[in-house]
Length: 300
Length: 300
Image (cartoon, rainbow over all chains, first blue to last red; front, side, top):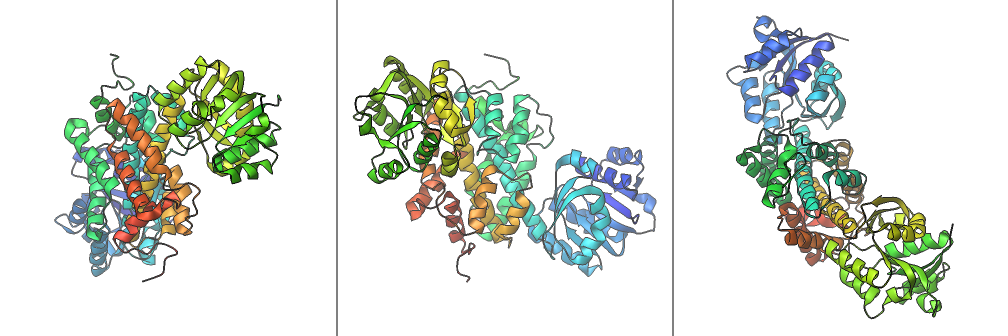
């Protein structure tokens, strides 16, 4: 395997895990984050700071920052990390962003003689660190070829969605629409069942093997059963991601009333102080509204 | 195995399949339905009409009519089919009904010296005919014991939800809440993705193996891809079933905004003439609202 010099921009839990997977595969990794502690932590694993790149150029840039605005800024704004890439180098953009933004950033990459892979990721931080992400990717053949060494090290599944940026971000938006709605529906359904004296545990047993199941139900409902709201994925993700979905739908003139309803629930939950909890906490306002005691809460 | 005399009341696609499975297991089946053609069709398979029971008594009554009102009527109203049961005979009630109705019908059964199993079913007509239904059941030990020969012949999975009627119906309502919301979310998500130039086929490929998947997405999205709206389960099911969910939630004082939004979509779709189509047709109003051509529709 060819060893590459790879910039990883954004060392939150996903970016940090990606950087670890790249290091494990033998690549030379340069990390950057506004949180210096994250950079230092990565350096103890064998990475270097971007400053260490000096006047050399990197082969690949993996952007794992929070959103579209941050992605455009780190790539082409003041930090201009895209300028750290060698001619024909490849940008891999992992944030969930609107397809139009992805198309604009691809055009800018091409104007600079760079490749651009529209490559939103899913799977969570554990799978990032294991090199087992799922990637919804679109871009030119050259972009896929340029990204391959990094994808090989970080992804279990790469969906090739075609030759132009935008399709990857669009598919990620479809996935987030469903995932966000399914988590909120799980909260609504479990609270509903509790009003009828069903236990969360029993509902998990039955629904997980019934037509009402979803990937998110099976993954998140156990957090409620276990009263464990440690944020593997936080409530705050959803006002952001469903907000992007709503923005895209609005541009297309499509009404998405179920998604809008879920978006309102997440915004209300965040405003009620639940933003940093695991997104399974979306059940809490339902339970509170009718005085239900969730697992782990003191009895009446 | 003990051969029983079993009444099957309601010979729609589910009841007919149940009756076939009971016949295959060697039971003596007496069928009734307001649609005489269904009764005649069942008799060609080896069943008899309820009239043939004469003054004899049956051991088990399986009620597979449409809703709570019909169930109460056939059991205890003018037809009084419950009176056709032997002392200590068992009623198995399969319709999706409010838990309160199940409790009331159980009480009436006990007052008559009968057993009552609150036993909503899921799985669809094909699995009914194969004897592979999933049953969400609650009732006394005596009710389960009395129902066992019929359950053995018709169900692959029986969830025992406790010793009193109501829990089975409550669990079914939780399942229907999720299933109904997930189908509508699937329609919303696929239409959304189509506005971004993603094909239904590609979305099925990717979402089915991603965190946005649900049992209903995997089951229903292919109907849209194949432009096949033959009703395995029709749009009309959902104003009924989500209406029951909304009624239960209202009694409990719980707001269920996601379910209410889905319920409105199904009512609107039914009012727009889609009621008898497969419930995957919930995508059609979305597509029409922005001029999308679904698979199988003439190009622009």
